[in-house]
Image (cartoon, rainbow, N blue to C red):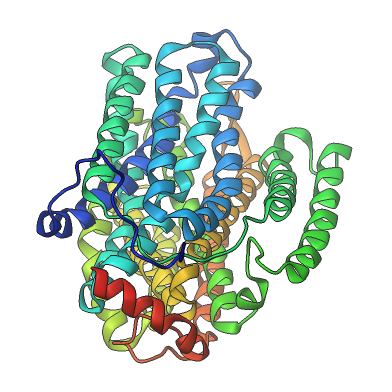
Length: 500
């Protein structure tokens, strides 16, 4: 069977009529991205109370976040490659289903082992955005593709901004299991809507799945991210952390050699090492670092006790509401990002976004005592993140063949995830080393927060510099292929647009 041939609807499955499906594709995929971000965020308000609720230690409870991070990092490139080979909608529906199963398990159990396993299942949803972006490339005409991809990229921030206050309200006024029953219902609705309204992409990449490459990448990523996420708790010089970092380096080197020698690798490293793709991944890692510090530091800063001299002593609900304007801004500014990319190219949009993030952190350094200035600074950072995150997938779409868009965007999202993990560890290290006792408990000083802002701003400027070094875009109107890869992608894109 020709892997690039149109894929018929499964027998016995009701699908949306073609015109209705065309109208619903973007909102259904975008709602899936928002739901994924909400699922990853809703556990945050629970963390302080979970040791009491589950009868476990704070260290064990922290694995509810770590497990999701590790599973998402490992599964994003793997499911992206599987989507390119076996069907993007099929894999997307599977990822949403795993996320929903994980939510149901959280709703049914208070056992910490079950909860950690369930949160690992939810990590599969990290592949939703790259798979959805690949479907949008295959299904939409070029004139609609830019704005749709920009919106899809922004759903991560939108969902995170919505998830925190929503979860806080549920936790405050209802049993904590209610929150997971709610997300389970939303997840089931998302699975059904995606299966009904989204067409299976006709663009496929033939070949066998690289099982050895997937296992090697999983081992390297787990070793790296486990060391980074637990380094502060275990000690950066401890044998466990040093051993994990060394193992990650060795496994990654062996994996790199294996990928270069494999006919159909999990990650096409020859493609990754091209400047337009490789530098886009570097910019994604740096942007992920700069973006994540905003949420981490803002939430802790506004909840700090008033006795600290700078803290506002806000509740978790009020904290979520402080971050909400950033989520609304991401929704409003995603069309602007698409227009800038169409006129100036995504490289300019990415550089502009990183510069705006740096400006936001400059505002945070200037004033982090007044609530309205804190909200303005956090919103400016969210605006820059919208511009940058919306431009990154467009850069990838222009630089890779159509049949590799899901796996290439999966790697790009993986780089953002690594950037966020490193950001979390770096911010924690800065704040731990700058504390003062308040009511007998160590609390980060304002100087520590300002250093974290300065660090994130400097990384944002590095992301801006990386964006400016990316080789020039192809013509803005040409979003189907990328430069020297034009011949590889044109045939598949033409077939996909004809089918759409």
